[in-house]
Length: 374
Image (cartoon, rainbow, N blue to C red; front, side, top):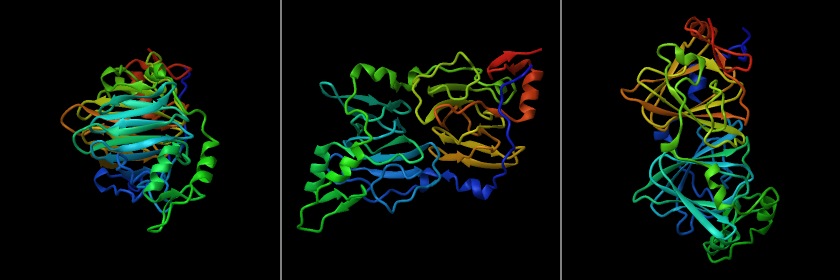
């Protein structure tokens, strides 16, 4: 039987090289004055660049993992009642609370509306929508943000935000970088920077009734108990949840909570102690984020290299590298994965994985979906 599984030469990545592609949550450093609104009341926050340069307005900032392919990842920490002012992007932006409660507010045909999202809920905001976010908790909280594209561009601020920033002496230069006017001097106009940004914005409001198509509540996620061919092999049983896009799931019946995948797909996984995906590869970059617990990342042609992820740590694994991951905690744990491009293709399994699955009566058909074999 012909199977639709992609095959490539395994890429050898040393432990030293892979370690450079790990962002340790405990070691992340916040960025100074990342945005023009950073000094406005209600917009106080710390920005942590994790993968790629994101959309910050400070030219000297560096991220924990500089290499961005198809998406950028940022973590925000804000005190109660603070977050980001109204703004838009030329790419999609996805919000995932790591802790606390967050309101996402946006302009619509009647003015403004908002929703409140909680840990591991996922909201995908489309291109061009004026949106902001705010920590609604009673303590500091953390929010994960993913923006599309290798280069996510710059922020397009609501004009009122620019006016408030100017009152505090902050403005954007002609390159869109944040600057502070000398003491006693008025901040120059940011109009030219805004005009340049506005040219790529598709829309400036969003219909409230469309929100259900962009929101995945964590408590409502629907899993597949057999999402991949390796789940028939002892030690690799797990549940997968397609959150944004179909991803690379081999269960043809597993639908995505948010169908519209732009630039990247998002999947959640839950597994028991000692269990997780077998050795496999993708044609795009894959990011693992530990939402809860501790995980062991395994890679190499035969799984010869290993390292650990702790809560909120993440690793960016390049295409062409055989990898696996397993829960090394004592309870069921959650992992988030991000796959590059809107169509990341199919999984390329280690030959031993396919042989073991076939011996247990499970294989892949010509389109790469699960099928019983004899």
